[in-house]
Image (cartoon, rainbow, N blue to C red):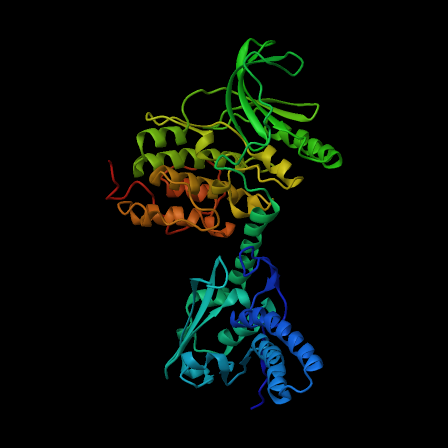
Length: 500
């Protein structure tokens, strides 16, 4: 039988930036971290070699044999580094062969047949050489031995060869369902790490309240937009924006005015950003969405963009939770249902829009069940598109939204993050996922699994707004074409929901 060997050469460079990887330089994914250890030693040895060279020139009578032996050391280091970086897996129709560095984990038997494969499981694990978790492919063999492959260190095409080999020649019963997603999960893991670094290195990670870029705040009584509005009270400031309760002189009413500072953009980008802000603002004006304060008007003046919305001075969800403690499961379910209904309504528009502003600081919540979302996120998303600043509350923003590619499923991530805060009194970690049951052991399994799903890094795993409404026990509007999963479980209708 002819054997076609597919070499998995990990020396092929697939650059993914890791800010905390060794000396914070760019490094390709590698199968063995030892290669990097050898690399760091070579510099020291090279310096010693230079000193030896001068010693030979200055001290011709010295022991040349010892000097020659010492000069070989750098060569050995370079050769070892090359061997480590070119370590490869051999894939064929007869089996899989491993490099010599796997010998301790395989009891010295580096070539294994497919029939010897007991199980292949793809799961999340921790990469000790990188700060971020990654996908780990664990191969266990019947004759003994087990290896863990960090898939994010293997180039995509090589990983595809490994996946094809497993799916083609290995016994299907030995493979977990996740193995069929080997390449797709790896692609997402790399993309997610790029998102993280994009936020950590190329965007300005600001303070807990995502910072204060616009520090020229208006005082009470200040006149805005050529005297059309008078500031009555400052409400909040963060990122490049500040919000005020203002008096509308012409209409004799109060409004919430949010001022976005566009001076952080260079002039050319600012003009393009203003054009998009005006264009998209027309879609959000006077939508009259359930549980969302209405956007009344928008303006552009000098280097500022203004959004005017209905006012609401009641305490935010964050203020309530910090003062009175976390909500119980029934309360969080009710909160999430109302947010899901708002998201379903805006996603159902033609064209579909994104709310984007879902976070505890922008949600009014009362014990009587009142839920109001007090801002939209489109302005921040557009300004971020043309700037290097992170202008959104990162713990409540989906990875793709931080990277500047907001999608409808990004709203579902924000709902999940808000639910996590409401039930735990803690902000979720950015890019780390969140397991509610690890913090609150009394929550029901279905509730915890729902939040885990909404906080998935993969937007497709979060489902749709219609599915979320259904899962929370709500009713879909007539004529909804959103497909619902057959095994959907209604959260809050189960037994064991805590009432404390």
